[in-house]
Every structure is written in C-alpha cells, then in structure tokens.
Length: 293
Length: 293
Image 1 (tube, each protein chain N blue to C red):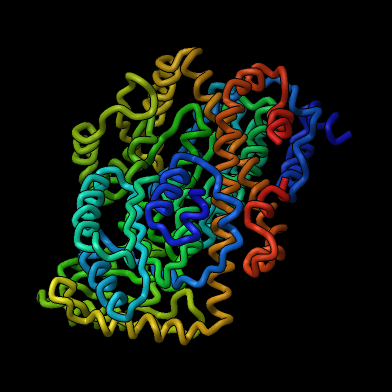
Image 2 (cartoon, chains in turn blue, red):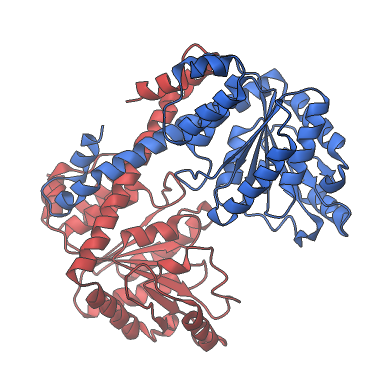
C-alpha cells in the first residue's frame, strides 16, 4: 500500500520510503522498474559559498518552468549537520505549499567519508517518484565533492571572490570535477579576478571537449541564475545522448562499488573476533578471507 | 625447492618469491606457518626530508647490534619512483656484501592510492624469512602515510626545519599517526622552533598514554640516530605485549580489508559489461550485485 501511494505520487509515501531506506531497509523491488528521466545536478563548494541560497534560486527558476524538483542535501561533516538541517527546515517551509518541490537532508556518511550507498538509494527513490530535476548539494569537504561528480549528470562547483587564491583553495582533483564554475557573491570585489583566474587555469574537465564556463551569480538577489541554467542546458546539449548515457553508466558503476564497499565493511566487522586466531597462527589470513564469502 | 631455499635462508629465493608476489602469485601456503618475530618500523615524511639517508643510518646502527634488517621502500607516486629506485640501487650497492640487509623498492599502488595488499604480502614474506627488523619507508603523499600507521609497530614521521609551518604542512590526520617525530637536518636554522612547535601542538597519538617525542637528527652526519633507536625502544616498552598485540591485530585487519578491496575491484571490472543491461532496465543493480558472489 505504501508502494501504491508512492506510485500514485503521494509525497508522504516518498518521505516514508526514504526514512525506511535510511534506516537500512532494502530498496523496494517494485520501484526498480519505474521509468527514470530525472536530470541530476550536483552542486558543491566550500562552506559559506552560498550553495543553499543558489540551490533555492535554481528551484525557483525550475518551478517557473513547471518542472518538479527534488533536493538532496548531503552533509558528511558532522560539524555542519546542525546548520544544514536548520537551513533545510527554512527552505522546507518556504516551499511547504508547493507539491512540486521535495527537499531532504542526509547526514549519513559513506564508508570512505563520501556519498554513501544509502544516499544513492534515496536518489533512486526520487528518480522513481518522477521528479524532472534532482539537485544534490554537498559541502566540499572530504570525499563527497569528488563523489558527486560520479553521480551527477552535471556538476556545478561554487566559488566566491573572497576565497583568496580561489583556484588554489581546492584540493588536487577537485577543480577537475566541475562542468560549470559559479562565482557566487559576484557583487564582492575580486569576482572578475576569480573568473580570469579560472579561465587561465582551467583546462578540460571530465566531459570530453568541454571547456567548463565560469558563471557569475548573486544568489541573494537572484542574479545570474538564468545564465547558470543556460550553461547547464549547454552542457546537456554538449553531452548529447551518448554523453548522458556515459554519465549514467558511471553512476551505476559508482553505486555498485558502494554496495560492494558496504558489504565488505560488514564482513570485516564479522571477521573481527576471528583475527586473534590468525594472529596466534591457528589459521591463515587467507583462510579467514575465503570464509567471508 | 624455491621454498626450501627460502627456508634455508637464501636471499635469492626471497627475492624470487617477492617478484612472484608482485606479479600476482598467491602467497605460498608453506610460508604462512613460519614463526614471525620481526619488529616493523614505518618511516614516512615529505619528499626531501631525508628519509632514505635516515633509513640508511638506522640500518647501520641495527647492523652494529647484529640485527638482520629488511627495507621496503613503498612509492605510490609515480613521479618519484625513478628517484626511489635510483636511491635504492645506491643503497643496495652499499650493503651488497652484507647478507644481513635486504632492500626492495615497490612502486605498486593500492586500490585507494595507499599501501597495496601486494606490499603486505611482501612484508609477510620478509617476516617469514626471519628478519629482526623491517623498515617500511614511504613518501608522505596520498594515502600511504596513513596506511603505514596501520601496518607498523612504530611509526616515525620525519620533518625538517625548512618546512615552514611544519606542523601545518601536513594534511589533517597525518600528525596523529606519529609515534615518534624526527626533526632531520637539525643543523639547519629553525630546528628548535619545529621541536617547540611539535611540543606545543601535539597531543596524544594512536598509542594510548604515549606522548610522541621529537628527536633531532642529522642523518647525513649520523647524529641523533642512537637517540632515535632509544625512542623506538621506549615506545616498544610502553606498548608492552598487549599493545604490540593490538598493533598486530590492527595490521591483520588492514590486510584483510586490502584483500576484500582487491576482490571488489576485480568483481567491478567483471561487472562492467553488464552495466548497460542495468541502465536499460533489463535487470536491477541489486540483481547484478548479487550475481558477483
């Protein structure tokens, strides 16, 4: 009956299923076969870069186009979790009367500090529910900002002018994940400098033959949002059907790896009380390894 | 016969077995039961901190005590591999006539950019061969310096005075792995400042109730090596039998995880050509996942 309500488009059924997924239940087999057409957009950047406000503006713009939008706010760093959930509530209340918007914070942490397999299952549920666009917002810490690029069709990396050497501010491998750069808070001094810095430094990213553009926004005032959506559309056009398919294969690969990692973590835990036998030489580690399957 | 020669203490048999392990052969079952008493010391630090020279001096000092010493130089970063292998050859030639010293460079890379399960098998082979001390030297990049602390009985982190804000120079989580800090090149200005900085910043590390000491060395001139060996002995005494056992359980846990990761990597590769069927909806990802076992 929960499944029927979900299929009928009841957002409370969706919320309930997400809660069940988070508590460790398996993804319902009946939902696996539902068609999925959502565009998945990853939004990442340093804390304080204004990602939430930007996400909010994107929601507004997509709603003006009558598209149904879901947001997953992934927050792998516990210090920020409180803030994310608070911000989440504020946003929730703003869109509370709009059944075309669904927002959920996930504080769960993957095995490697990145995006967990549970988050991927929540994403699957949102796809199966029939959203047109799913935004995944993550704070750029740990592994999550790199993971996001493995999941999303389009990855947006948010910078600000006051980030000092913005380009140097990111760990190796992070700049490369961006399909689109956003220089938010562009009313602050230095915005043009950051854009120039990006143009000078950035070469090709993940998408073949695509030079990631830098879009200036002022999310507080809603400026530059239309340009950002245009850049997303340009990237979509550039990907084409084949490129989009590649991205989705990549997401499946990532999801399969997450499932295997979860399994391995569980087996490691089970093996724990047998390690002393290996240490004492009673059995070999290889034997123990084989017994885990 | 190779195994018999190995058991008889033939270093060429050891070298051959290591080559076989590196090429992907399984660890020989006959060697699993051999007694292991080696002390495993991890030595890590930034490129240019003088780890190799320091290792060399430690070898010398241990040889003076008539202990048999093996060195594994792990180099997960291809740019430095050439240098490591060159340095390795120089060291090899210096100890070429000394059958109590065995040195081997491993350029292999773990699944996560850290220490690979092959490296752990080489370590097992060296233990089974009967070395008294095994030094594992790794450049402090990627995951390898954190991995080393999961493997070693004692972890030495090498800094230099000219490293600027030495303590800040390391990524989060790296300072914590040290059982002993070495401030090498202590004839350079700033050595005492780094020692003070360490004393001010460093709290407890991995070993319960152990405050990691900072030892000044000048490896080029052989100064401070005796003090470093004393610090290692102090740490050994502090660990006690129970602490040492904990370390070795931790190493087994790490090795088991590496085996599981290797397995998962292999299965992911095999699953690759079945991902399109999942994408097209012919089968579910969960089905594919279950079919991997």
